[in-house]
Image 1 (cartoon, one colour):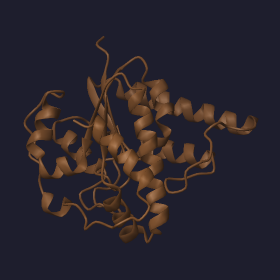
Image 2 (tube, rainbow, N blue to C red):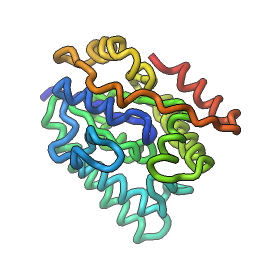
Image 3 (spheres, helix red, strand yellow):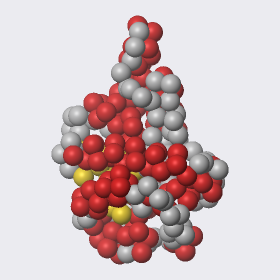
Image 4 (cartoon, one colour):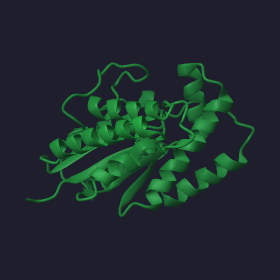
Length: 239
């Protein structure tokens, strides 16, 4: 039996992961059998997130006293009870991956996977895996989180830093990956489509409804040294 080709989509919240997942879906790459509601919170076009993947990721973060906007300080379980819970969570990952492995090519997306990816990487180790990462300038992500969640700008910026540090960490340890800038996905869809088509068999994708996907008016952040350093590293790795 030919091993599955898997495209995990990794990226920070409000960075274009849903748009990227939608493009993969239009290339007939399945993101999951049971996705979250198409007209869900914060994204009228849908999130393209497999309910099981989201459930596993939420439980994993909760198990470590965290959530998507309050990341755990550590990801190593303490105590027998937490170790048992983590083992059960890993079994859920293995079962889910085994079911999906019946498909020749598949993908999954949830921004939380930036944090939980080691849990998935272990289950995917016998498959052909190519990460598709995406990043967006921090001022636009901060603006989006402030507008959607009434989040404090300082907290939003800190989240951007943490998520993208994780993203860089996973890319550096990946055997294969593509890293895309959100602005290119929006403003140069033909270029990105050509890059993805070189990886994925299927019809040429037409990126629709991009007028609403344009960059937010920049939210200017005063603290630039760390975000700018991370942004430069991401840009160095991008296609």
